[in-house]
Image 1 (tube, rainbow, N blue to C red):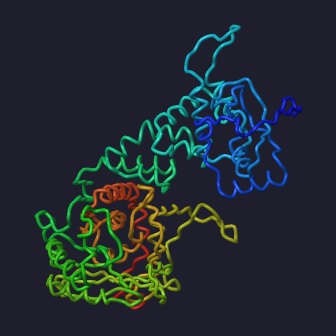
Image 2: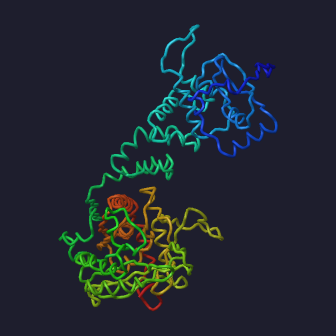
Image 3: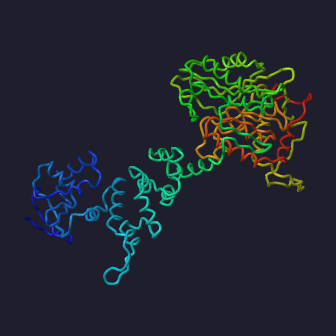
Length: 548
């Protein structure tokens, strides 16, 4: 055996065939990539073995399994080693791999090994030194975590982690908070699984991080306080039920001033409402869809007063770039089945439309429609909403707390700033200048996300219901959204001093909607609403109509 000195250790040259592999040590670290394997083989072939393997006196290989593989592949019979007087343990393996390029899985294995080798006993060690377990573990892990409480939380995560070490891998590779992972395990995991929210599965799949998971479970659990019927006296009535069952709620028969709703569109998405593939919107043909929807609206329309209006938000569906004619087909079906009178259609212009998922190229459609029906056109309620000509009518002064002195030094009379919800409504009404058209942007509806940070599919644009409600109802009127979803219509109704009635089949979106209308009641401000009303003037020859 050839020997020579290498740093402070003695290197020896011995036969590769003498080396004994230890299975637990060989497989401790993840297998290497083909690229890394080829790189090491080429390096040893060109330059020889530069780093010795580590063995013990029994020829058991502690470290150097990849080097041994490369030598065998190259049919080199001898290997440089350093012999240590030590057992073949994982701890020794880790000790010699501090600077190794490691996978996330490797790092988690090392953390587990450090906790395993450091017993939980307390007391005195030799020479009277105090045994402080968390300090030992912290040092072994390079002071990645400090403090007894934090070390105990890491250990709890290790012992109770999800399948595949999801949480520890997140902590190691994505810098997830140990506190948040521990909070999830001790507070939210059981709640999520018991109630079937499904956020744990999304966490496992990598669709959510730990912060998002905890937040979503907490907000969803907070919404479970709402029962199947949620009433805020004189403000809103919400039902978690199929809208066709409203015909059995006799207190609402012929009591509704306006039905305003966005119905499920044809062949676009599935909703979490428990109906699966049988839900509305997934019929075999557009004709079948329109007939089914119209028959549903028969049961809903019984709630309308003789002066009542029904407005249905609907958009076109395209098949390979070709429009299916859904809007006209639905209009005809509603008239045929419900007996309601078709009055008009309003265009909803979206300055920032989103394209449908289609392979065929075509211009993006920036229009959806509001089909407008009445019970009796002679007496149907209608308010002509107008905006003031700024040259002839002084608009309400709204300040934001700055520049309250004019250029001549005159101090303005203090005017209370209008709150954000009403500023949005004010600006929305002011922007409308096109006959038969409502302009309203789409995008993230912040009021829904305040209640539930995951939001929901196809959330209605926040301001879309404003003008229809103002045109067809008076203060105190009853506005019904039969496919309420997250109850955007209900929120608008409450802010405009109307009463909101809603039905929603999905338990999830029903509870979100309850939170939305509850917040709307908090946001309602009669003084601010009066400022909005000041902007709406009675019709005269100087007024410019928004919609006729």
